[in-house]
Image (tube, rainbow, N blue to C red; front, side, top):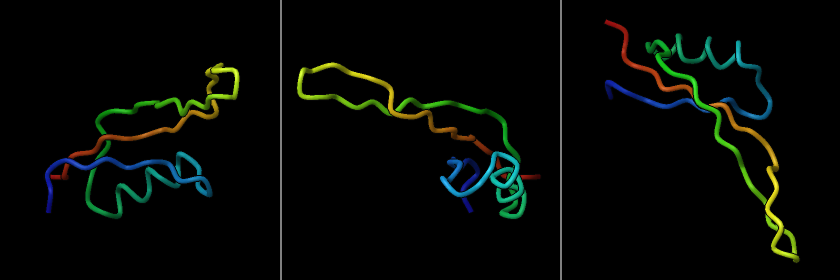
Length: 61
């Protein structure tokens, strides 16, 4: 099993649901990151479409 793993909050789940999933898999979160997803229109204007929340987790000892 990998010592470090990333978990992304899926569209159908809450942050709490994701934390429970991390715990069930035997990991504990150590870092939370928010990654913006950008879109570009025909006029080359860039806008933020959504924010994705990603947890970095390490294997429980």
